[in-house]
Length: 411
Image 1: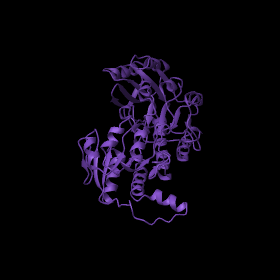
Image 2: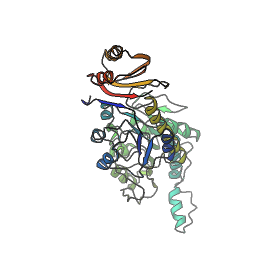
Image 3: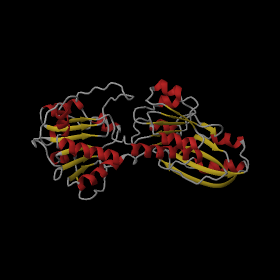
Image 4: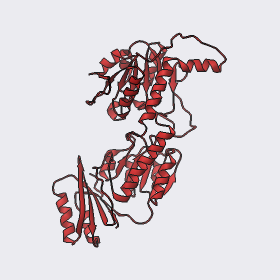
């Protein structure tokens, strides 16, 4: 755990910084809570982010901003980070946990949008719609059915059967596709989908492969030349998860050789920070390749829902200390009354709760309610108290060797 212990009492105006065109719904919800919100269109690098976080308690980002240990070390007023997307690999969760900072994301809000894009791209590639569209814009009328296929009856292989992969499974099956999936975790098959025991088994059978894995370091380079070579001839390939998962040079070679009939890529190892920035890829200019600018979850419905969901979690954390669905802190959620509330993040070792209560008892503080939860190396206890809360008691709690972060919400 970090040596520095943080103690704060909520006083004055809370400030939030929202980056990367987060939906206005987030600003509205936070503003209703009396939080002062600043918005920035694009992502910020480390020094820019640190400067912008001066005096800021809440940070909202999407996928382009990296929140490192250095950023967190240089932003002492920060209380929580909201990832207004599914992934949190752009945030140093270990560093956040060591400082008692809550991190929230939106694990479900844009799943349908990603699934619909995947289905649209599968049909587009199977029918060569991009090629037909380009010829029509060039004035060429090509009504041939050569190379065009229905997706009904084709076999879809899904790599990663989480929230998105499993929903894609259901929708694809409704279109008449046969669905196989592979996941390192033990996942329940939905509908008639069949689980494969290895990636090799899936690649040998499926005619369309769609990747839906997370951004953990172990998944970097997951799909390269060896995996492309295992795919069936004239297969289709989609990646709508993380750019670092795929070797794009290998994908390019297998497309140009004709081994693969098409590909759809929405994510890239390196992506521009803001709208309008230049983009280059070795996949540009290849027929039947659909390139989209990381828009899997970029629908109005999904972004509004994400804005509402994550801002709601940040608002609840500020107002009551609730950490329900936090990705790193122990989950605690209790109703907030008009009593003073003590939020104590600590090292998960025996005896901490008894020590906390002993300090309060010695200061003749009456405990009205208390909830404790643990996760790994961390414990988190919310204590509601009545009567005066002496600074001496808070100092003792802050100075406990197990204390990671102490925060007080005044009654």
